[in-house]
Amino acid sequence: MQFKEIIGQRQLINQLTRIIDDGKVSHAQLFVGNMGYGTLSLALAYIQYLNCQNRQHYTIDDPGRQLAADSCGECPSCKKFNALMHSDLHIIFPNAATKKVDKNPSSEDFQTEFREYVTANKGYCSFDGWFHKLGIESKQGIINVRDGRELIRQLSLQAYESKYKTAIVWLPEKMNGETANKLLKTIEEPSGNTLILLVAEERERLLSTIISRTQPINVHGIDNTSLAEHLAKEHPDMPFDEVQKIALAAEGNFLTASEYISQSEQRKTFATLFVNWMRKLFKLDIAPLAKTVDEISGLGQEQEKQFLRYVLNVMRACMLKNLAGADSPYLLSFGDEKFSASFPKMITVNNIEKIEKDINESLYNISRNANAKITFMALSFAISKSLKNR
Image 1: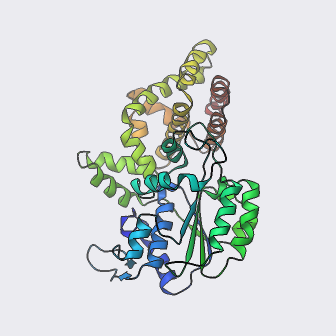
Image 2 (image 1 turned 30 degrees about the vertical axis):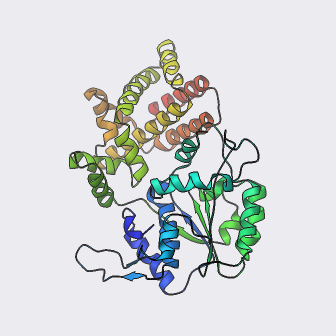
Image 3 (image 1 turned 180 degrees about the vertical axis):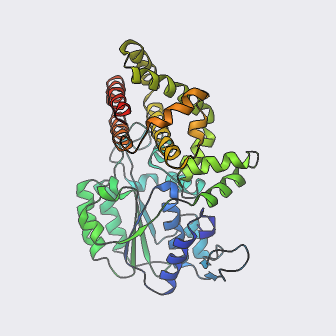
């Protein structure tokens, strides 16, 4: 992957190419940020540039050009890294048993599927999207000890085609304890010319010993202008002012923005459910509330999770409207002017943190097969209390 394919992030990209050009490449690096920000894409472009045989350098103030450098995209090394098929590239990632591999699964068993998934999405990937690709959405994936053992073996060998043996650990927070401890020594003291990139979303879930032995690369949200311009190119029939609102609502997350656009009909359904739910839980009229909770809990696990993410985005949009007066697609989708005008005022600095915590806890519980009716009823009581304590 080339840096020019990444949405925004030009300042960070120029820092990364400067590190490589100056020969200051750390053997173990931790790329941290939501995958919708382009975290995996940056890591992939980084290793392609590192191994490129004909790096391109530009004058940044040239009209229309913001990158200081990029890989050529044409040399044999670039073509192999772009296809994720370089002999010196090794990738491990969360996996679980499937119909294809029903016993002792490992990353090695799913390399073809992973390459297809990553290249089709240009690195803008998610754990849920990856497991949807495998057809095992309801399972809890890990990076198991077999993955760690195989990666250590691969990195002990000599580089075959390039200067560096490169390992990518995608979502290392999914490593179980045994795997993390097994990889620790390799991360701390790898063999010569070894580069290990950990590409994570949740830094706090990693072992502190792993964090302390890696160079951090913090990836922040995509700037609104770059995200809006990219969305406008992908969806030329969409009015630009609507694209701008979606970019703002997505908070720098390309995956969130894409999901909003592709699932507009679903969001209309979610909006109707949300409005009914909020009205019922605020009044705490138990019988009608229970009926609405039954409706929500009948969506099925994946839809329930998506609904909770929708609710989380609505709450954040309400907070943003209160602080900056900004509307978002999440607020405009209600189709109820009275509710759209009144509800955002109920989300304040005094209750937003508690509301987000309760929603995220419910999302966690649903992901782990908790009873949906009990989970949503408990969440109803919690949100009702928070709305009244604004």
